[in-house]
Length: 144
Image 1 (cartoon, rainbow, N blue to C red):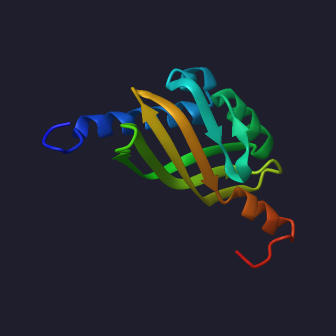
Image 2 (image 1 turned 60 degrees about the vertical axis):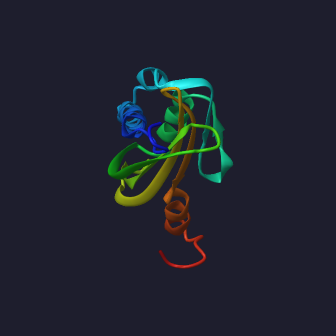
């Protein structure tokens, strides 16, 4: 830190790490993505599903989607003053195909990462997939 401000390089580096991790995850290349995670890595998906590795989430996504990618809209970063970690927020749209081959492209998402010492230690993932699936099956409480 200089003059009470976070060094921009620390925030930029955390954003670069997260975006590279996401790019590898979309291939999918869970082995390559794993190079960016630190000890004790935790991934929490919508619904509270917990995974311990990029391979776990790739296997989950392989069952939920025929294929899926992310269209990044923005990546923002902020220092957590209590821990010194950087929180990285990546938002955008999922696009791909459901298992039946139906395409989609406006499935909103936000992923929140904790980056400490150059490694991702936690990821929280939220998206509209569950709501879209409920609607497709006539179970939504209100129209989307």
